[in-house]
Image 1 (tube, rainbow, N blue to C red):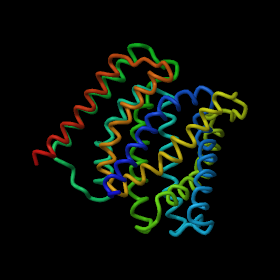
Image 2 (cartoon, helix red, strand yellow):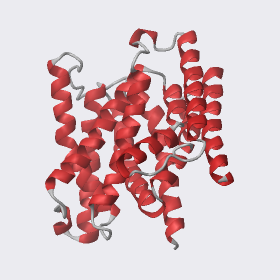
Image 3 (cartoon, one colour):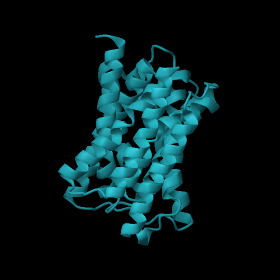
Length: 302
């Protein structure tokens, strides 16, 4: 199997599962505190990934081949993404988050420029304007409909963008800091385990300042099943697929692949969760995608 095909399958599986994660996380946040749901997911994901690494490569592969400070930094990026993204999802509508997430190529371009010095592609600023306009339409539609008004719209959308930027930093560094031959499964396991202390620290700090509530340890069978699905598929397996895609195709391709996440999210939300998107959210998502396509058209012209 060719490297490009492996990368494509990695991104496809990851984005499909990330699409499932959007409406699924919205359901989970009805039963779990946003600061507490991620540690629960990562405990399950770490156990699964650790078992897979030990069985496939031996128990010695559970040890880190790179300095612990690098694992801690990568894990912090993952934990920051989870906290910021969950808080953003908690404070706004899942469909609006999907529309904003469609601008990932723009966010990836900015982070790549800052971290690697990569030049901003032709058409970047035009795409940025369209992305912001599209996100604004989706957010305006949500505000007009009064969805989530009790939770306040202010700040939720920005938290989603910051979360995506943190995830992009992790994606870049995870491929740079590990040796080229390190399996993606092993990289994912180490950063998943490393994220747990950070997530618990964020929860404790949020608890002290009154932002986090008591952990719900008895939510009922349906939320527990949803939590298990989110941990196994949307966390563990999706991250392995994503890292494989980044390794084989690069982070710029990953930014483009993330455009499929809102599409999968809308389809899954409509089919499984009976969520009907607002017209403004669909229009806003289309404008965001138009911005991304404009940037790609400029790339072809160049």
